[in-house]
Length: 231
Ligand SMILES: [Zn+2]
Image (cartoon, rainbow, N blue to C red; front, side, top):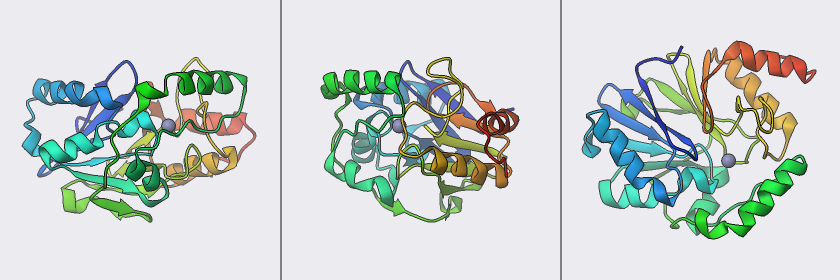
């Protein structure tokens, strides 16, 4: 079960997460350009001052996860952390319509292209660009950042010592398109290997960017159903 140290910020578009450290908080993901006030409201509801948030991690470079990174950095001075393999799009303010595997994905990508203006975000320069495993200890959080590609090249997960991981769009337990892999992704093989990597690190609960928390047993069952090894 999710611990008290992970606070979910539910919005109609995506889920953001606040992680409680031993000296402040870490925000994971930054929604679209409209998510500044939902984030502020969530802080207020939880009795957290903006000055108590030390950093914000982007799980990946897609526009529904990086929307207000620039604003949070400029207004509150939070340290913005991104992965090296996705940072170019963030620096350029480039809206990526990702690769997809099927007809529903192509339809959604077409809709995305039509409403591209709704997805635009301010180009910004992250404070920290990471690549390999990166400890979150300097931010008072017991855990690390782990590169977990497959949905996008620059996808990474926040893996906490508590056995929880915040995984962006690496998976989803939703009716559409189906529970399991996301609708968008450049390689299922790479994606499944990222799942296995997190299972090898003893992740018990996966917090996705869209939808509810997923227990590890369910991820193993999805791998088995796909004819994939679970280890
Ligand atoms: Zn995405």
